[in-house]
Length: 170
Image (cartoon, rainbow, N blue to C red; front, side, top):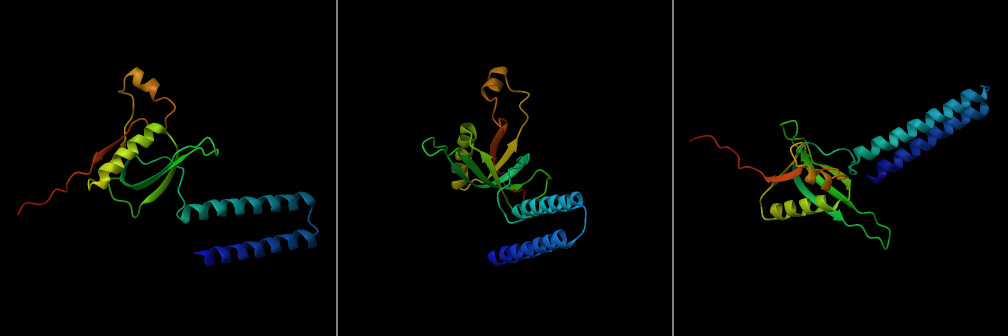
């Protein structure tokens, strides 16, 4: 793993040296050189973002509508050291009505309501009852509940026990 990142870094340094050589020894107009530098920077940034996603780092994208919960790690906020808190969730996407190839890690900002829901789901999962998470729309909630949950990213999130598989008759 680290060897790949080292090789990739050496390749980037080599390409940067090539760009610098072309900038120094060419007779191009300065505006064309500036565009070349900006294009190279954009490609480096895009490459970094792509590698970050492919290396298994947690994503900050929206949770799927339906998923199988595997595990959570919750870092509570701490004002003394300036820690905002975050929640890491490992899950398998079930929203396409088929099991995904492998689980995915998600990183969410800390919310007390989300913390309590995930804590209860992990307790159930720890006792051998696998949990399915589902994000339901909140239109049917009463107005007082909606105002209490304003500002929360997943107010309609609920967890249910994974149903037993239907076995064929003998």
